[in-house]
Length: 497
Image (cartoon, rainbow, N blue to C red; front, side, top):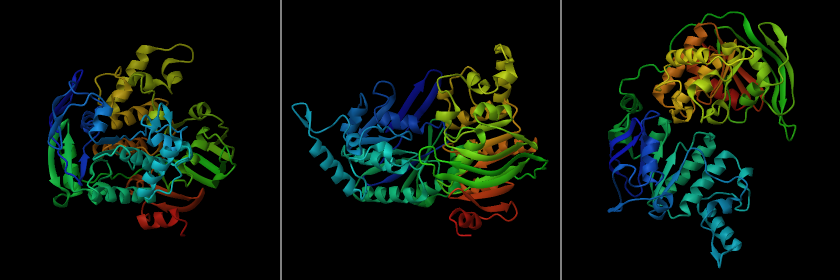
């Protein structure tokens, strides 16, 4: 890709970006959210057709102009987006060959389809039945099916956009084993990730983008994580986590003997958990995927679909919470794990999103007061340093970090006593993470009680005043800031206590 330039109304997303890839190379593409990584890959994969951008794409020595995704696929380019594009109602085999089913005289040859899909899965050492509905698979297996689908197109160039964002450690290792085998076969891979540890584990070369421009391309062995971060954000990054002592007040939220069950099977997801969080305290909740962390928060917030029991006290008063609206009325806010699905209405403006949960407090009980809404949204944007032209900017056009700030702003406008944060920095870059960390620290200083779930151990340890650890729905560890270590957390998270 030579001197690629791409403009949107009022924004130059790519400014003369150059990127090359060799056969059998693992090439990482990193940068802050909004740096232009995904836009560049959409140019390469035909999402943005020739004529809508400047510059040149050369594949195996031949200049190419792709009119659409199918053109790029025919040239051997396949892209796996962060949001998977599988049809969950169809089988694995049907998804792999969707739109390219083997047929004769318009009739699909199902025997051939499943035989070819089975061979493809076998070649990748994936123990998946091609006749299994995709919706029955876990997210990790679905990600691997996406790779099988890409390889069914005889891809020579494979682009992976944040492929491990929702995977467990064992699923990540399975994915990396497959990618190593593909590399040995001569498949060139472009890998986009905010997880720099993974980047350095796998990469031959690393290209850094910043503000739509190429900062540089270097061999991974000649770089350090600190150097890459400095290139990404344009400055040296010292301690990522703010150092600040918080003053604790009385208990803002107390939970006694909370138990929650899965809706369909009555399986126990949260098992008799009790804890309290004080005003001005950041309480971290750690554990492996499936430990019951999110289910715990959802149950307290009245959003869990299964049965639950236990007692909830807010500022010493026992309350009954059976729905999110009752949780909001009792002073609890919830920044959910999936901001695009549960945190934002992407087609609506920043203003509409920010004031959605706190309309009663901002406008009153009966009439919407647009002036008050606008003032509140502008102030929140300024406080949280949301990068956008105005409150009327559509939320779906923002980078991941700025979207997360809008979600945070939405809940702060409800004036909560307790704020739940579920994976607050998932899918956002290191610069935006630091800003979110600073916001969390400032809110705790103001006396807000914060309960934070995170899969990133450094985040849990670096931000929390106290850490609870869950394993298979049970509380297996509790550590103060002074005594917590990664080894202690992992021991409790795996049940080895």
